[in-house]
Length: 110
Image 1 (cartoon, one colour):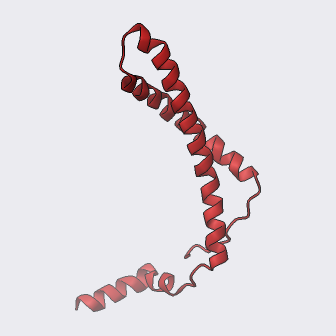
Image 2 (cartoon, helix red, strand yellow):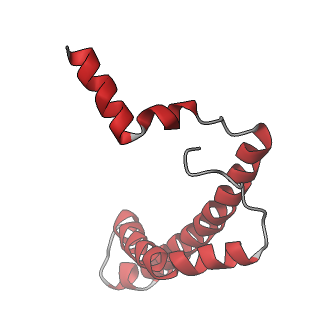
Image 3 (cartoon, one colour):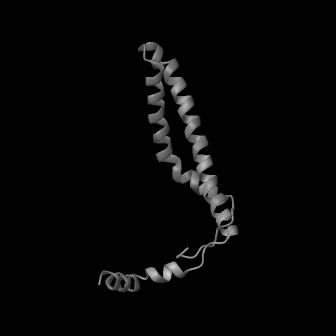
């Protein structure tokens, strides 16, 4: 009984059609990888640059003045880095889109 109900649900939900759709080609997967990887690499570069620079500045100024441990300065640098990521994440993604990388041309089911 459960099997029949499950099959009926799958027909109604369209799950059966999605399972029968074609798999993405190797070229589509490579294109998707490059299209997704470029913004991640750029974001990681910006995020780590801000983290290192902010942590170093905090360590050399507030850390000296308040006798703060280096790890505390690094944690405060992480706060600046996270804030920068929130503020500029969409901007970095928009710049990566302007590079003109090809889209993978996937269907909705894929």
